[in-house]
Amino acid sequence: KALELLRAGEQGRRYLSGGLRVVHQYQDMPNYKALYWDPASSQEIPVHGCQPAMGYSFAAGTTDGPGAFPFSQNVVTANPLWDSIRNLIYGPSESQMACHYPKPIMLTTGEMTFPFEWQPSVVSTQLALVGDVALVCVPGEFTTMAGRRLRDALRQTLHFASNKNVLIVGLCNTYADYITTPEEYKVQRYEGASTIFGPYTLPLYLDIYRKLAQATLSPESRLARNEPPLDFFNDLLSLTTPVVFDFAGWSAHFGQVLLEPPETVVSGDTVLARFVSHSLLV
Image (cartoon, rainbow, N blue to C red):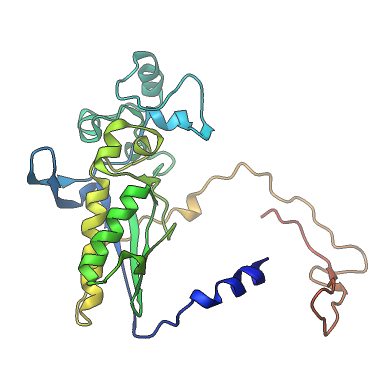
């Protein structure tokens, strides 16, 4: 089927030519600041990110993938019962609640650091230009409209004739949940509740990727070397039982080939190989 699809698309293919340029930068989202044109007030306002947090509607799931009862989407008011249960785990600070408004916070993940941070604050952002095609490497899931605004912003910055040449590639290097528009954030459906850096997450990303695009246009430009996220790989906890005993057999060893595949095959042949493998658990 893959070969069939490949051949079917050959007529519409074109070869890319031109230079290759890739830029990358870590961003501390809660401390990132940008300007946002607010359609409600018809003026440009300064905005910043928030420490990560998940809203009530996150627990509700989506229409095609419902979550836990009794949660529902479009929740913008807190529930005293669930707030009290949440506070037993970790209650959000006043500044955190104000930053994420109108999202009622279920988990203030950015303030929870035991045994390590629950969600990333520092994310990886990257942009690659291959000829006249831009690959936008994003650290989260953009809604349709959020992605459209990102593609339009980069098309303008890169002076492309069409945003068809701007491709959003995710997920890359980091997972920071969803990214909605400020308008989508206000209604707090699942995606808005899962937009972890607050209502202005998208405007921040638009500013970040515009700057990455500007850097690709200037070969002499040098982006600041921001601090990477903390590496806590060696501190990870595992609840998986380790392999206690693994045995290849008395007359065999791990990796030994028991049945070699044929040297030559033709389309339609069934190729068999057999070898000794150890447990897939690590």
